Image (cartoon, rainbow, N blue to C red; front, top):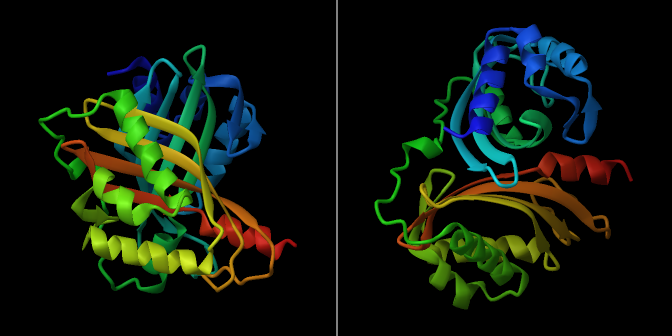
Length: 284
């Protein structure tokens, strides 16, 4: 296991064990958490307060993708706990729910120095609003690792860049068959590439000027997986995901994990920060 992956897992173990003194030992003297700066002790106090808001709160790693050269790792994890107060305009139900997150974590001198994360808020709301409905976790680690390591690290990165270039250039119909399998699994939902294209084109009717800018890529050639953090910039002309058009552009983040098989994308797990976009528009 990579040294930084081991450090990160130990850090998460400290949270699960409520070992706040141990937690700070893995942290750089200055720590940035989604743009907010903390001292190690300050962050320990913050996490301690956060954990008290959820009865039985625990964190589990789904998958980690490491870039040792960049001293960075990407992680999909899920936590579980029963909210004790209102969340995202939803009342607590007394039941434990899952929180699925994507984290991008940097290290300095072997210690954690920065985290950017996105939370799947839609799934949180769905669980709180429909407590009797069974919630199924979509886990990356349940996907078999391909025996054929078709693409190198740089090949995986190039393929993902080509995927997003096809969206920006509006050439998805001609280019995606070269990059994706004819059948895909998107957040656990199986669909043909043709259906995926139809859904993408329908979504773009609401944001016809959308441009996607890749900000970070972490690729794992052994697992044939890629983590991408990107920025959406668009001007909604129709309501989409709760964004009401106001004639102005909005920027928001997305993080996604892509699984490749035989050199093409077969599965994807995206989390889009629609809530961040809503907050940005509401603040105008």
